[in-house]
Amino acid sequence: MEVSTLQDLLRDPTKKHIVDTVDALGLGSAEVGANYHDAQHLKAPLTSVALVLEQQHTLYIAHDTTVPWGVLKVGRKHLFYSKPRGGFIEMDPLCVLDFYVHPDRQRHGLGLHLFTSMLERESVAPHQLAYDRPSPKLFPFLRKHFKLDSYVPQSNRFVVYDAYFSA
Image 1: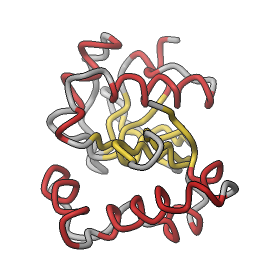
Image 2: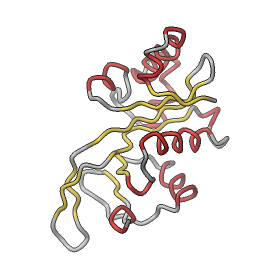
Image 3: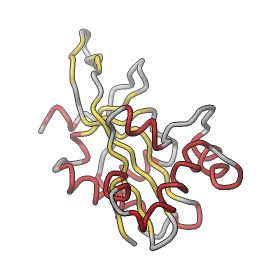
């Protein structure tokens, strides 16, 4: 299984079908996007190709020669973080904005491969990221693989782990 960015795939005309499938997935079209939108509890598209390019985010795609099996979208966001003892901190962390692995490929290491590939290419550690509205499956994933557990709940629904501030 290979991990490529959307930009990598757009530069390779032989991979156009993978980009088209990712676009269909993000737009929630027919059968392709149904699992994705159900798993994420989404009401609107998050990861269409046009949206990723417009917002200058980076989309990592785990794929074989013909099919994308997982996506991970990251980008910088300006956040106001509520400190545990009052007050705010303004910050601009790299954020995990979307993370999805097809149900047929879950619990086989693909999500971890996709996530660690992103960490390597972005030169960050998991505790240096903010997570936008993490799904119920993301919390145990981060706890199991990266020992991330403790955070202060935020009104903006981003999760920034306490380890972000101690490193």
